[in-house]
Length: 376
Ligand SMILES: NC(=O)c1ccc[n+]([C@@H]2O[C@H](COP(=O)([O-])OP(=O)(O)OC[C@H]3O[C@@H](n4cnc5c(N)ncnc54)[C@H](O)[C@@H]3O)[C@@H](O)[C@H]2O)c1
Ligand SMILES: [Zn+2]
Image 1 (cartoon, rainbow, N blue to C red):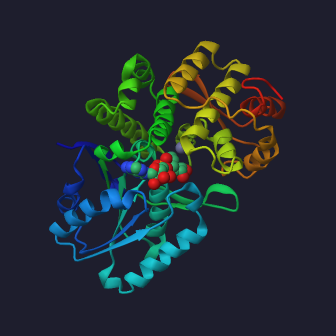
Image 2 (image 1 turned 30 degrees about the vertical axis):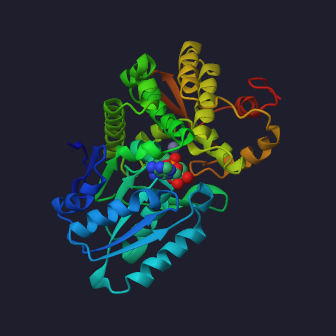
């Protein structure tokens, strides 16, 4: 039994199907969705492929797929770069030079596979259909939905990319059972993000025990929380598909300082860990500005702590200058200002571009100070 959440974008609408142990149904589901291709180009990585590619391949074969090409990219964020993207495009062209035999692209993996592979599918022949098959918690609740596809370039996160919606997101939450504890925790950062700025009831449910059950991979809780997060993301994306109206900025909570840290620390932190530190820093900014109370800050920090996520990245004062540089290269840096999404209460937020630099510097320094929680 699959749970269905629709992303309503007119002609680019698609369903997100969520289940557990359902990967072998992918082929039949593609047919049921009216996708007629007989060739598939599966982008995955050396960690995920041995675990799940055979099931996926068998499912596609059973549904009448004839050529199934497996293409692997590196298993880390460092591999989300232009060279790997280019090699992926080259492989698409090499295997499918005939426009009449164009494949469906299937993205089997976490956010790195989804972002890089989705970008290759978006530009190959000006776009071939693709399907997201997320295998991390983070990809299930966030990166597989919404159509932002990209690679890092020139030291800037996701600066080369496109908007291109998948035809289907097919989420087998059974795949989360092989995820490392660290990657599972990392995915909860984006879930806590949704609760903190998009949905008070999600925030409260996480506090009331859902986070604990989620970390234990309690099946009904995982399906319920993933479906709720996907609905929240779909609602934001439906109102601001191309990130032009400011509505989609809400999803950037924790990402301004978080992305700067993720890049500057040379990927020593996972995306979720960096975002966790970024959310704490943004919340401190909100408290300093009188936009939210310290009680909210304490509740957010308690949730992140319970998830096993870092509140700071202590002992790395040398990252201050690189982080400042990274902030100025941020995608949303304009007219000399960074965009900050600041929480105001559970499920509510404001965006600000006028923050005083000394205050921004102070919270950044606290995030990386020699002693946790103290300024340099
Ligand atoms: N496009 C968007 O809207 C969006 C939103 C949020 C994040 N992102 C991007 O997503 C990326 C982070 O994604 P991620 O956290 O999924 O990281 P990831 O793709 O690097 O996956 C994390 C690790 O888990 C491994 N893995 C994946 N599935 C597994 C499984 N089922 N069992 C065992 N190991 C498995 C991977 O090989 C990798 O080593 C970042 O690049 C971030 O910028 C994009
Ligand atoms: Zn993110």
